[in-house]
Length: 226
Image (tube, one colour):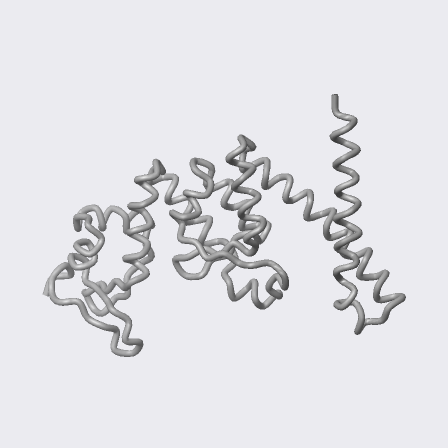
């Protein structure tokens, strides 16, 4: 039987719904020729092979819908291919959880097109790679998780005010360096004088000192700026 015909099925071991090529193309609203082109360009993962039959699943369908949404938002196929490469080389959520998830920040689950909507025209492969390197973004299958709603909202607000996302991410990397140094200072201070069991309990005091000093520093710089 040809690869592109026949009813959809389920993988016998996992129960996951699977599609042949023509069925997947129909579900995604594209032609078989377009699907073949996307596959040859590496825009979708390889299918599962069973003899001469190629089986596709819901992740392939989700990827095709994401490609369509990004094309509607003005991305080119070359750009989408670069974005896909960046996503696939980034950390996934299991790796981040193994390192310890943020204890006070609220993660945000996004589709690639929702991320594009947050930063209209600014989600380039370079910016995506920078955000993945910083650990702001991690992947979970076809979805993306931003580790902090606060950072997502602030970054989007700065971009709306005309600050390029690339510059926001560069600033974030510099802030990360200073924040790590401050965290190390306070952690060592508290461990030396309060004991290991009190470090977490006294954590809000360290945050208050940093917030107050940053507020006063902003006042000084804004006052001195001509």
